Amino acid sequence: MANVAQWKKVGPVDGVLETTLSSWKWFFNYITAHFKDYRPFIFRGQRKASWPLEPSLDRTVKKIHRPLNPTSHLEAFRMSVRGRRGMNPQQLQDNEWWALGQHYGLDTPLLDWTESPYLGLYFAFAKPRDTRTDIRAVYALSRRLIEDKSRDIAVAQANAPVRPDVVEIIAPLTDDNARLVNQRGLFTRASPGIDLEKWVRTHFAGKAEAALIKISIPEYDDDRENCLRALNLMNINHLTLFPDLSGATQFCNMSLSIQGY
Image (cartoon, rainbow, N blue to C red):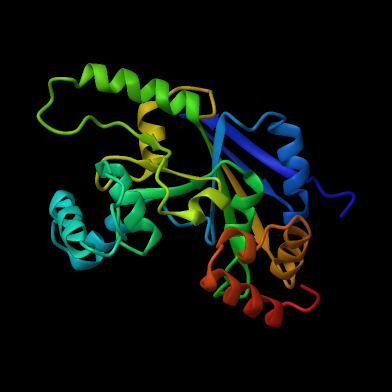
């Protein structure tokens, strides 16, 4: 592997930089080389590089083949959780309600992200592949570029009768979600039906700056097991990321399936 290029890059084109690693092992080198300060970025891991950057609510709308009112869906969730949040629950804004629902499996307009690239890598590899060979992905999103562009769009569309075509970056300050704290989690919210990569390519058309970086990672043989072992040595596992009974059981199950975990 010493004679093989660690990665190949294409772009940035229309705000998107695409990088393909020759092995998951080079992910750490790539992050060190290109993200000496990765605080301006947020990261997301996906099991398949071919999957679009779309939230669960959009995927559900595609499956049921009929329009869905997000406001009505959120109100139904509010009504359904009455009396189930303990005594004197904290008052929540709409995006905080969405974040709470996301935690418990509600279909929402939010996409999960993390402040850590290595947690992104974990979520990309956490579940087994369903084909003989697969390509996983970790995305990096520039907070500054996305927020600046969204601010300009909000001003330009201030008088529009619908929500401006912006991407919100949401960091809830609620105490209902211990997982969110341990995962250094936050969310993005785009307009309904809008794939985030397409949004970037549309609003950064002709721009040679990387608002979104897609890191594709091929998987062969025992790559998943080796990657998860390496991350476990960094204390990145279900036990630390999901501080509840579910996380403990998943950690034990993974220890059964991965020798030496």
